[in-house]
Amino acid sequence: MPSKQLLIVDDSETVRGVLAAAAREAGFSVTQASNGQVALEMCRSQPINAVLSDLNMPLMDGMEFVRQLRAGGSRIPVIMVTSVAEQDKVRSMIQLGINGYIVKPFKMEAVHQALEKLQLRA
Image (cartoon, rainbow, N blue to C red; front, side, top):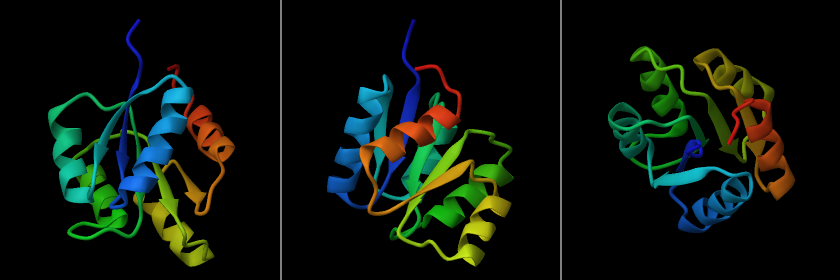
């Protein structure tokens, strides 16, 4: 049985690497993008089962990525990875349709738990 495809979106190569390692430990195949614009194109052109996305990125940030993804009718689960923990920003992200969030700095266990909550069987 093929593993689930997880798209990791972050402008930091280091953060993408850490998230990719956690996702692979959880049994996911991993694809990466450096901004929301590239991620949106990938979601439209290939099978993606879930997304871990940074909030603050150049070209297209995580909020705009989710806004456009949902506007296109996609229901791909998105977990936002952010250093922003203010309640109003979190509420805005939830209203846009994210399925969860992880606050930076994070522990690998937080990533595993967030992926597990999506109930994707890797």
